[in-house]
Length: 378
Image 1 (cartoon, rainbow, N blue to C red):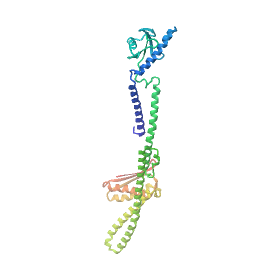
Image 2 (image 1 turned 180 degrees about the horizontal axis):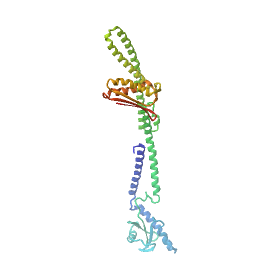
Image 3 (image 1 turned 180 degrees about the vertical axis):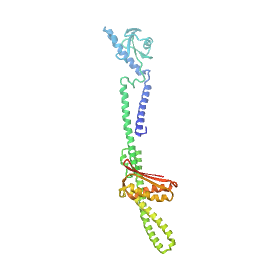
Image 4 (image 1 turned 90 degrees about the horizontal axis):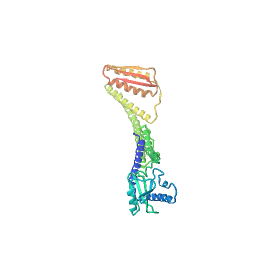
C-alpha cells in the first residue's frame, strides 16, 4: 500500500475505531456489574411500586393480581410478595430468604445481592409486614454502551461516520501532494513555466510553503538555463570574428612565407576549420534549445546511410577492416539532412575506429513498426 491517500484513509479509520473501543472500555469500567447505591434505590423503588399495586389489587378482591409481578420483557424483573417470610403473591424466588430478613432489619428498608441473577428486597411502605423480592438478569458492564437491539445500528453508524470523516480528511491531505507531483512531472518534462502557489491556496501552511519553494526553484532554474544559453550564444558569435580574422592573417602570412612551412600552415588551417565547425554546432544547438527548430525536410535515409558507409569504408581499408551494409528498401524520414548525417557518421566512424583489426562493421537499416531502425555492430 504505497498510496498516501490509502495510508491516510486506513490509519485514520483505524485510529477512530480504536478510539471508539477505548471509549467502550472506559464506559464499561465506569459502570461495573455491581449496582451502585443510586441504581439499587431505583430498583428497590420500582419493586415497591409494583408490589404495592399487586397488594392493593389483592385487598380489593380482584383476580389475577399476581400478573403485576410477572415479567413483561426478558429484561424485566420478576417479583414475589412475602408476608412475614411467607409467599403471598407470585412465584417463589430461590435464595431470597436471607435477603428478606436483611431488608426488614436494614435502616434503608432494602437489601441487594448480585450473583448469577440480581436480587432486590424492599419493604412496602403501606404495610411493613410485606416485603417484595425482585429477581432480574445481571446487568453487563456493556449494557449502556452496547444495547442488543440497537447494536447493529450503532456499529453501522460508527463505520459510516468514521469512514466518511477519514475519506474527506485523506482527500484533503493528499490532493495538494498530487498537485505538487504533477508540477514536478511537468518540470521534469522541460516545462519550467509551471507554478503551483495559486493551486495550493486552500492547503495547509506546510504544503503552501513547499509549493512556494518549488516555484522559486523553477524560476531559479529557468533563469540559470537562460543565462547559460545566452552565454553560449554570445561566446559562439564572439569567437567567430577572431577566427575569421585569424584565417585572413594566416593566408597573408602564408603568401609571404617559404614553401617549406606549407605543412604547418595546413595543420593550422585544419584546426581553425575544426574550431569553426564546433562553433557552428554550438549555434545549431542553441537554435534547437530556443525552439527555433532546424527546417525539417524529407530525407532518404537509405541513400544517406550508403554515402556514409562508402566514406567510412575508405578509412576502414587502412586498418584492414571492412564496412558491410544491409539497407532495406527506401526509408524516407523527416528531419535535417546534415544533422542526421553527423549523427550516423559519428557512430559508424567510432565503430570503425575501435573495432579490432581484420574484423568488419555491420550497418543495417530496416523498417520496424513504421519506424526506421538503424543498427551498427562492430
